Each structure stands twice: as structure tokens, then as C-alpha cells.
Length: 262
Image: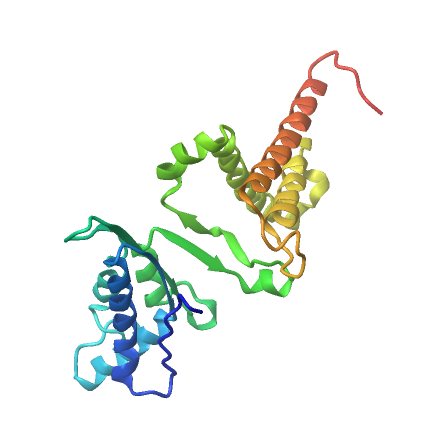
């Protein structure tokens, strides 16, 4: 807590205070950034801030837009998030600081078509979508891998390639398998698993390994709650090698004249 600044603002506080709190936080972050520090700002939540903005807009008699929010909601959100980034500070000594903004969005009833959610997703470069169904299944962290994304994947590829030459290809393989699993699950629900080919069954099995053995973590386990990068890379290599090995065996066994294993 010695390196933490808290700005507490509850929902029963004045509307103007709720709107000003997020700007206060980013301004304090810029102060420490100008000192040459790397700052992380957590805004929980931007949805409550947007509600305060909507209430102020209504009192001012401004023309409402979608769901009663002001038409400039997207612009205000963009102005806030664009204050993040790496900066070279003026003055002496020469110093470089950065701000990383992590904003929590609380859409009503988990509706991703909420104006605040839509505007946020149009602005941010990384999005982690929490899934209530995953939480109910005790899958933690309950981040939905189909809704979440990062636009920094290509930018970070050279960095990870220096650490491990297989990371980029394995990461793309995992994403492809998880996406194919979603499509295959729809077929399984209609006609059953037995109607799938062996290749498709392998995709389901490996995707389950990725979900339950790689993505899912136990916060109460000293070994599992924190996953160092070397451990992550080794797990990815093992799962990818298993998939490619079994897939190659299936293709070889389907060739004419191939021996059948019982």
C-alpha cells in the first residue's frame, strides 16, 4: 500500500464528485508518470462514471442518445483512455514514464450491447470479457476466451519470439482450436459427438486440455495461482506437441495400406 493511491467514491456521493473522481485519478497518475515512474491506474468502474455523466447531462437538458447517455460519451471515454501510454518527460534529468489504464466495465445483466461497453471496446487495445457462466462452473479466472482480445499480439510477437521461437505459432494454434471448439460444440448438441470425425474429436479433447489444464488456475494453490512465463511456455509446447503428434498419427492411419492399431 506504500505505493498505492486510493480515490474512494461511493454511489451515494454527489454526482459531480463521481464524475470528477476518474479525472482526479488519471491526473495523479500523470504526476507520478512525469517523475519517471511506471503507473497502473485501475478505474472501477467506468460504468458508474458514465451513469454520473448521464445524470449530469439530463440535468443540463442535453439531448440524450442511446439509453439516455449523452452523445459525447464515446468522446469522453476516448479522452480518458488516450491519456495512457509511454511518455518522455520534459526537463532534466531525462526520464521516461508510462501509464497503464485498466478500466472495469459493468454492463447491466452482462449485456455487451450496452453503450458504455460498446464505446469502450471501440477504444481500448486489450479487452478481457468476464463470463458469468464460467464463474458458475468454478472456472477461474473466468475470462471468456472468445470475447476477449488483444491488438498488441503482432507488436509483441518479436519480443516473445526472442524468448521462445514456438510461442507465436502455439498461441495462434490455441486460439484456432478454441474457436473451432465453439463451432463443434453446436454440432455436438444437435447430432452428438459420435457424428464427428476423429480430427474433430481431437480438437474437442485438446481444447478441453487448454481450458481446464492451461487457462484455469486455482487461487488456493501455491503452485497454481501464479504461473511464471517459463512454466507457461513449457505447458504450451507440451499441449501443442501432443496435438500435432496425435493429428499426424490419425492422418497416417487413414492412408491406404496403413496398419490399424487395436
